[in-house]
Amino acid sequence: MPVDKIACHCCDLIQEVTELQPGFKAHCSRCGHLLTAKTEHALDKAAAFAASALLFLLLSLPFPFMAFQSQGREQEISLLQSAYDLFDLGFPFLALILSLFILLIPALMLSAYLAVLLPLKMGRCYPWMYTITRGLFTLHPWGMAEVFLIGVLVSLVKIAGMADLVIGMSFWAYVLFSICLTATITSMDKLQLWHTLDSYSGNIRQQPQISSGSALDNGFQSCHHCHLLHRHEEIHCQRCGSKLHPRIPDSMQKTWAYLITAIVLYIPANTYPIMNTTLLGADDPSTILGGVVLLWQHGSYPIATVVFVASILVPIAKMLSILWLAYSVQAEHQHRLEERTWIYRMTELVGRWSMIDVFVVAVLVSLVQIGDIVSIQPGIAATAFAGVVILTMLSAHSFDPRLIWDNLNPQEMDAVNQGTEPLNDLLDKIR
Ligand SMILES: [Zn+2]
Ligand SMILES: [Zn+2]
Image 1 (cartoon, rainbow, N blue to C red):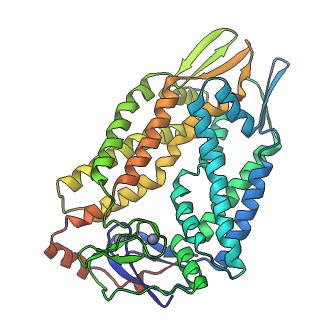
Image 2 (tube, rainbow, N blue to C red; image 1 turned 90 degrees about the vertical axis):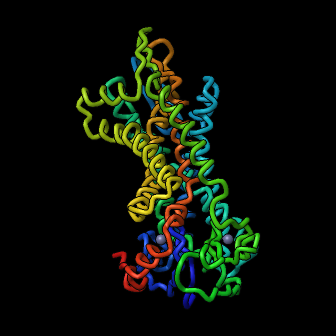
């Protein structure tokens, strides 16, 4: 890859990216978005981490994950069993969230990584690997292994005083799986993987004869999946085969629809109990905020802060941010472009972490079921809150950040472009 022309995913500015040295990354010269990064021996590292992650994920299934002992009785759970128990107890939505986000999607991601990386390591590239790579990056935001682990940690603190807890072998296997999955994702950059596929299959992509301005103004559109530039009249991406659009179709309508539904659901998510603990026949329902207050009163200050930030601060900040972004695009604001793009990136990055409290409920409900001694049931707020998190994530995914920059009039566009530094000056050393 001597020089590659790409349009920034966040602001649509056309830029030339020269071949990176391992350890370097390239940022957009206008909005600062990370365009690509290169890791040394990326293919070897990503393949090794993906294989290890899949092995640890399989090892985390058959053994006990955690056990809960109270008054001589014990409840032991495994990951598969807890999803099944939730379904059996009449909570199919929580069972679906647990099995999908912490097991099925990560397993699919790892299988896709291996299906692409192993043939590449043997110097082979087949056309179907392009389709798999496209699917792989679509799944990325929905894999929530590390969020689940924080949820497990919070669950342990919440019931630590109630009974004895035993950590099983599957728990440690899941921790190792989560670390290896994160290492796989960070080793292999998205754009670098697309370039590796092209170089192994011998595909040389034509570079358009443009070097400034936005792709849209130059009559080009960037593939949403692999970022290859195409002329406006082209319908399907030559590299990954996906349908091309200059901007996300109906971006604003979808963003508003998901956002308004999330705001409406946020009311029952906070006013109704998220779970109900029955201890020796006495009910003790607790809301999200009530749970935070209880953790604080028991002296678990760091955990209380984590839950407060993830369950209360982040969802509110996220909904307000999307509200402001959507409003400012429709009101055609021409100021604070970089700040608004940064807020969009943060909104996308932190959204999934709000799922912590939903995982806490799922773990506690499947773990704490000891007949009439003690049991935990999920409240209506757990479903509503999971809905809020998923809807705000969909709302952020539907928002096209390039619309922020489309409002810029030509004079201001020139001023912004003149103020930018050449991209090569902005290459940062990772270490
Ligand atoms: Zn940019
Ligand atoms: Zn493509």
